[in-house]
Length: 209
Image 1: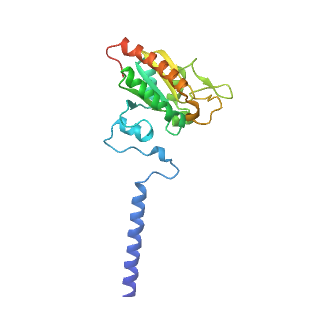
Image 2 (image 1 turned 90 degrees about the vertical axis):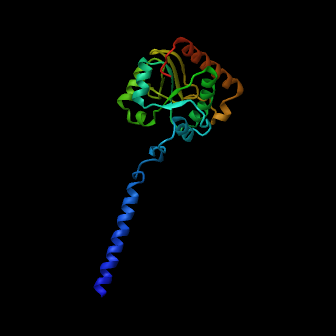
Image 3 (image 1 turned 180 degrees about the horizontal axis):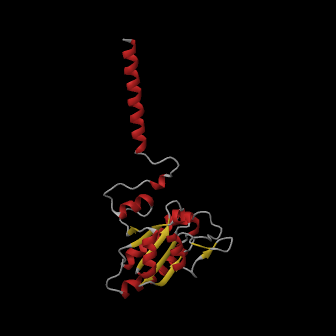
């Protein structure tokens, strides 16, 4: 009887360990950040973007594109490409102005590329984006070109017609976006973006956006 109880207890312990193992397999792998967790299935890009950029809200015009797709648009496409990542507080605020201006200009899609991991790993697609934006990029402290964020390119059939990366590197000593974005600065940004967006909305009947 004692041996039987011991065997039963052993079986219970093994079952418990097995349940814990399978439960852990459904979680994010150890060492991976929460940013790698995938949004819920069935959500629109607008809803997914709002989860990452809550200041923008779910009624936004952002659609997700990976670095390779963003490079393809920059090379041959037409539309607005927004490069950033959700951990960047300056991107969070910039996205609000960008979305509002797009709606005003009649642009129904902004292509959003989260560049963080590609930039960290210096991937082939990151190199492609750098080459396509060559001559318009800022430089790091070692004199090397780098894609700083937030970064916006308005493109028409592969031709850059407007670039903006205000606050991507130099924030004029201001520590927070709220301090930096005065009404005057925000108004100037909106006008610049609107003028660029208006060019592509007039220049083609079947744009990538």
